Amino acid sequence: MTSNTQVNYRLNLFEPLSQSVPAVGCEQLDAALERLMTADHDETAVHAARRHFKRTRALLDLVKPVDRGGAARASQKLLSGAGKLLSASRDAQVAVGAAETLRVEFADASHERLFSDLASWLQARHEQVQERAASENIGSAIGEVAKAKAILSRLDFGDAPVKDLLGSAAQTYKRGRREMKKALASEHAEDMHEWRKQVQRHWRQTLLLQSAWPREAKARTKLAKKLSDALGLHHDLAVLCAMIEQNRAVFRSPSDVNTICRFIYEKQAALLVDAKERGECLYGEKPKAFHARLNAHWKSVSRTDDKGRGRRKKQKCTKKPPCGPGCKCEKKLAARA
Image (cartoon, rainbow, N blue to C red; front, side, top):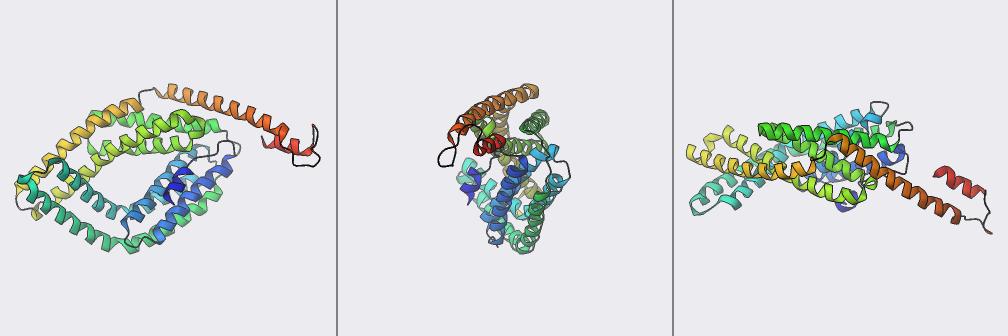
């Protein structure tokens, strides 16, 4: 299921948006619903469903400027709410993973007891949150996702061309570049998290539009994914640090808390260096230049496709004997092109 939905997460730019957009969105939300309906206490299924939410929200953000009604915005809002319903358990889970990352990097004989205590507390906390939130929140999330999917049929793009989507993608790129500058200047966890959201949106919109720039899309999505991973771990460590600060009493001594937080800050500093290098590579181009180059890619691809379809038109006739020039088959193909 997961690999198939990933492969199909792209828009057919040679079809009307009214066909390709709902097709991609419904496929993602069907996959999310399937995950949630069988999830129960399965954290992996819940996490997979949230990924499908994010993919669909990135799609809706891309098409929102050309949606003549409010369907894209309404569906996006419902999916945001569904994601929040499942976030408490997710935050508890990522804290466990972040602590394990610290243990692998910093643990030695002198810190073995400290990391053991931390892991035991986080695991117990995770189980409590999961038990309390799982069933009720999953049911509510399923309802929100079903509503969001129904709204996709109301998307109205008129005769909006592909170049309007390219302009929307360029705006996402511009926001990501702005958030990068803000995050690198402040180094605050909240700003880093906001930057990550824009990186993920750019990454997913690049996947959606990969037919417009097939050669660059693969390298760009790979770079954006690695940047997102670095920023994601930075955020997970910030979540872990906040949990520890709010629950100092569960630790044996203030020294334990200070030691763990010191490890967190050291790892975040290393992640920041990595994110800066990757971010400057991903967002090195000015937004206007990025937009112009994306448009140039699309013009080249669409011209090539038009020529290819023109050659196929003359050969493709299902009549026996074959029709000559001007037959109904040829006219239908020409109208479709």
